[in-house]
Length: 95
Image 1 (tube, rainbow, N blue to C red):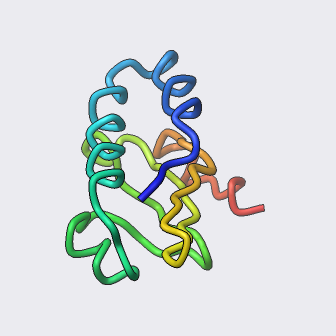
Image 2: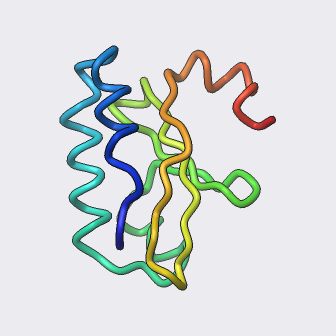
């Protein structure tokens, strides 16, 4: 699966350096496999949630949330946002 875009990971990690290795690890796993559906993805990443058409991953012991849109048919994972858990909980990202 292809990840778009690594730029968001780099930008977020500049302010949250402890997130870099976990985010890179997540990206390597996503890019090394093909996922046909949410269930297959969930079997690899147990700590994730589906919120409408988005998939939200827990990163770095749930300190951060990685919000993605995944096109299983195109095998593309779009990184929409990476947030601290506190900002995620405020819910403004849903708008």
